[in-house]
Image 1 (cartoon, rainbow, N blue to C red):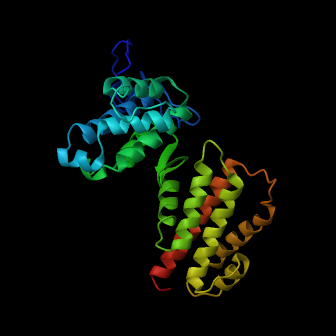
Image 2: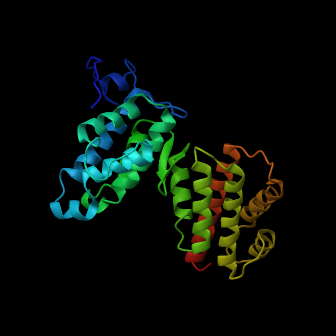
Image 3: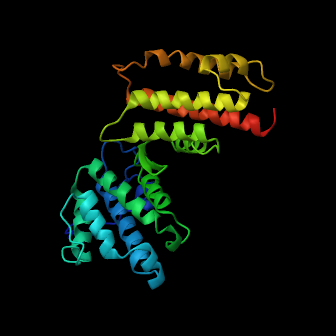
Length: 289
């Protein structure tokens, strides 16, 4: 573990000092950075998951889920791009590697921290059956929420958010049970959350394609979105004003050319709005209206 020479100071969110505004703990949404308290909480979560995965599971679980040495070989190779030895554990010392990870989480750029957490959470998720009821993604999301960090795990990717309702809405729309709808939604999420090469234009396209696919399920026929929306207006139980809103958004699609300058905010707006429309249609269908 990296050394922490800072003095011990009490910091309890919603504790006496925080509640009375004497030494308030941060309550502003963190975007584009992570404060020290959040970094420590994330590191504690990593250490807990590691301990559960490799120190508290049975020998049978280790045999089927991989050893800690194999785990650190993967981290060195995939995360840090270092040469590794497959014939021995030399260079993969547990204490040394926990210190390396700790230094990354506490001191490196926030995007590197989130990239590391995304990778490690996926590795821990493979051992989910040994970690009890708390899934790694749920644990990190709990930290993000508690520390007012504007990020959440969604379909295995960390995405920037502004509201937990958005996450629930998008998550439901990406898990409708309709293959085409779910695939387009997952593509839209992945393109939006790719921090190395974000593709907001194609994320927007995929969001609209997901809405189009859901219209096809509701109508029982695959049609271009504009035609499908016109037909939806005649269906019993459908609010025409909601369909009109989607028609207005459909007018944005022709603007998505190869050189379109689509912003993160625009792509996110389309993702959230299309998710809401998909969930609306799914609800209508489930009630047989």
